[in-house]
Length: 175
Image (cartoon, rainbow, N blue to C red):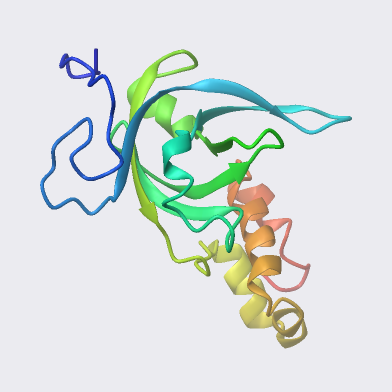
C-alpha cells in the first residue's frame, strides 16, 4: 500500500505513468522502494539511509559516461538533488537525506515513492561561504577551475551542520 492509501502497482513503470499518474511529468523515472541501510568504506564504514535503484533503469540512463549520475527529483514529495552512486556488486544507491525523515517521518524499512530526472552533470550547488572565498582569492579560484574539484569542496561545505563550521573552510582574513 502506498503512503496515500492506494494499492501499490505490482510492477511500477519507468515512465511518467508510474505509481502516481501525473500526465506530462517533469520527472522521467519513478518507482516505489524501501529505505535501507547501506555501509560505505572498508576500514571505517559509514552507514547511510539509501534507496537502491531498480535494475530496469540501468539501460535507460547514461551510466557509462557518468558513473555517478547526478539527478534531481522528489522522495515522498520532498525535493532532492544528488547522484546515483555505484556499489561494487552492480547496484546503485541514492542517499536519503535527514530532511526526508524530518519532513515525512519515513525511516529505514518504510516504502517510499521516488521520482527523478537526469540533472545537469556540471551543476554545483555552491554554498555562499565557498563562493565568497573564491570571489576573494583569484589564485584559489584558478586552482579550483575543475568542476570535479569544486564540486567535492562544495559538497563538503554543504554537508556541514552549522554556519560557524561552514566558515572554517574559508581562509582567515577572507571573511
